[in-house]
Image 1 (cartoon, rainbow, N blue to C red):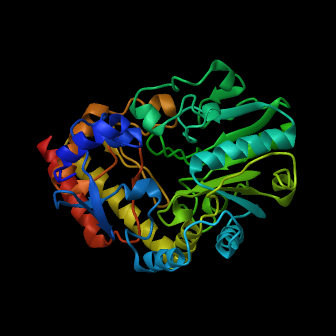
Image 2: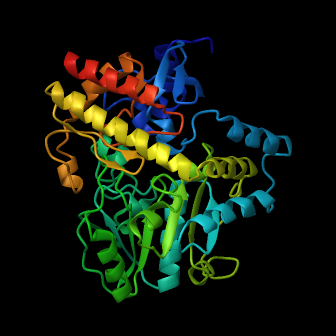
Amino acid sequence: MGSQTNRQLFRDAQSLIPGGVNSPVRAFQAVGGDPYFVVRGEGAHVYDAEGRKYIDLVQSYGAVIVGHAHPQVTEAIQKAAALGTSFGAPTPGEIFLAEEIVNRVPGIEQLRLVNSGTEATMSAIRLARGHTGRNRVIKFSGCYHGHADTLLAAGGSGVATLGLSGSAGVPPSAVADTIVVPYNAVPEITQDDACVIVEPVAANMGLIAPLEGFLPQLRSACDAAGTLLIFDEVITGFRLARGGASEWFGVTPDIACFGKVIGGGLPIGAFGGSEEIMSTLAPVGPVYQAGTLSGNPLATAAGCAALQLLDSAAYQKLYAMTERLSAGIEKVLNGAGLPAIAPRVGSLLGLFLGDNAPTQYDEARTTDEKAYARFFHEMLDRGVAMAPGAYEALFVGLAHTEDVVDTVIGAAAESAASL
């Protein structure tokens, strides 16, 4: 190909790939300009095709928590790859990863591995419908659960960035049984509802924490109606705590969905629950779900290696660095006259440019997207890479030391002053 500048690579990609990207937010449409093309990562940093070094707050949208190219993770992948990359047969690694997750997360007795967070939520919905014999699904506006037809209505993340309420190509029949309600308010739940799916911490419309009582009350309302509660922990899983949101909030869902962290940076997803519910899945039960690459040995090896690094000391470091960045970035932005709120839950961090902390989607959409786009480019020019959209979270990992965090805060101060 020969092209080595980011711009040339993007032009080459646009001729071969729709929009030049394989996930829409990467195209920089929300912030303008051309995307940088990453050629390698190390710890808290990534390097683009032109040799520029960035402090990375994207971290593969949370999939990388121990740092890029962590020696323990890369060694696990190399050892697994040397034995073969895919078999279409059970492997011991599937058991090892399932055991790691089951031992950590309250309420998870059995687990099914898949290839992405979208597959996990899609399969969890099918399982809930099959288990209850009901069809209707309740989701919350601004919560993004992947791009399955049933769940794309009023999604956050890239859907919010592009200003879409759903997607062309999704027939009305696909969402006829999907009810969308405001986040942080317990809806009416009836015996017609198969399940309620929720991000326990909304991390795709910026970062919005659940109001006190929201999740426990949601749990109680589901119980009263015999409706299954699904936690989409693709982002929160093993980032909030060792046992994810179930441990953090003390609320146990019927089904939990995972992704990102559990693959150590490789493609993976999972969903799990009680043995009773999970036994509804084929080959034991009548709900069909399958995947040729599910339980991929490279992904399970990487995931086990990453999870083993996440001990109590690791979480304390993650919390401390995230708190340091949250407080620092709020202080310098507001001090420069750029109203900003950087909400934090555990090691999850958001950034809203405005005066008020949102509690649901309509309020989140009042963030100043144009100001975010300018701030994004100022930060990028100073060697700090954030997500190219105002509705994504910022991700701090174990490789983000105090010095790295302070460099980000310094860049934020300069960026805000220049605006």
